[in-house]
Length: 128
Image (cartoon, rainbow, N blue to C red; front, side):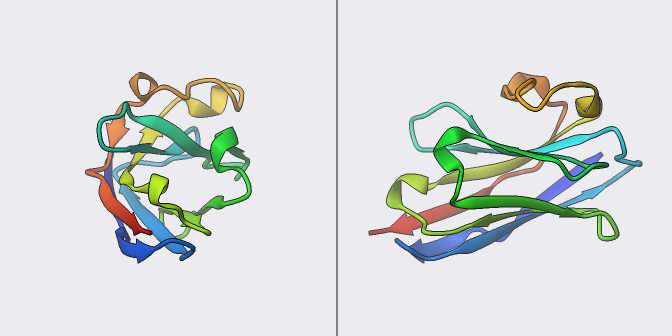
């Protein structure tokens, strides 16, 4: 499985941005696909997850209401729409794939160590 994240950039506070993660390699019906981020000097943290088959989603409490995760199965691409961006959202955003994610509950497997496949990350910088 290969993941290619894109869409990052430099934006101003209050702006919106949509990240993409193109996936390739094998069928994803049992996968959970997730966005993580790592701010400067911080650990990688969970942002949002989507179950590839059902489309069900789960969000970090800190991100609810400002981000929307989605996927296009025809394009094998996952998205993260982010609104009302703040300077503290500045981070490298990573997409990740868990081949067995569909067998777990929403709130399970939210740690980076649970994920087998990773994209290269895309930088989001929010200026004040």
